[in-house]
Image (cartoon, rainbow, N blue to C red; front, side):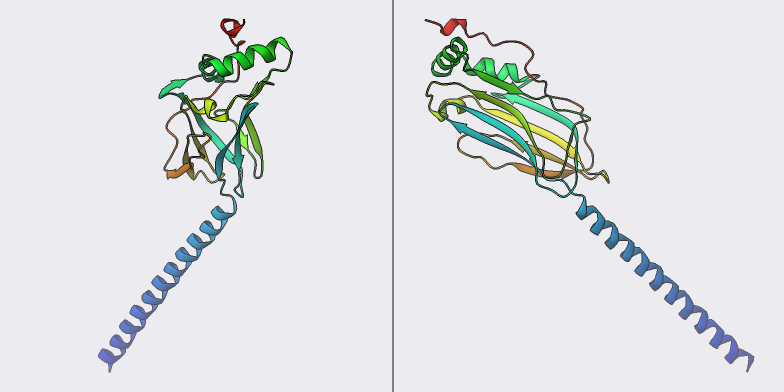
Amino acid sequence: MNEKAFRLDFFIAIAALLISALTAGALVYQTRVIADQYAATIWPYLSVTGTFGPNGGTLDLENDGLGPALIESAQLSVDGKVVPTWNDFLQVLVYEPEIGAAVAHAAKTNKLVISSGSIGPSSTIRPGESRQLLSISYDLYVHPSVLSRHTIALDFCYCSLNRSCWMLHSRPSVTGRPDTSVSTPRCTTASSIASIARSLSVHRHKK
């Protein structure tokens, strides 16, 4: 009789342990599902949009996601070389005869408009926000393909509020190359892109 009672108590204890384990597993799963659902509501999604026309071009960084994008690093490369400012790209452009002549003419007629923005660690792009990176306009016609003679690449590492992070690689051009964005455990650099810090040297194109 005592042996039967012991066996019954033993099976009850095992059943209780199994129920507890299942309950704990269900709670862990539910917590993970809630965390994933929350993460999905604050995911940012950055992309670079390039607009190229006969009178100049613009580059914009857009956040089409649901949460703010916390920029951890930003890097600009021109023809495979990392450069610190937009000046380095613009100075390469004005070496092209067509653009150099257009810039010089627009500078003389006060129709040259160049603007740029700094971006790097501590920059935040809100949901639905578009941040202008670079804009250049002139009044002479230049075929848009001239703006793509020199390859530029933009690399951003950004994170969401819950510290999920992504790497964005963009090579904007008139051919419309798609951006690539991949998740990363963390951002390992803290570089930035500075705005225009000095005037362009366009005197060589004046006639």
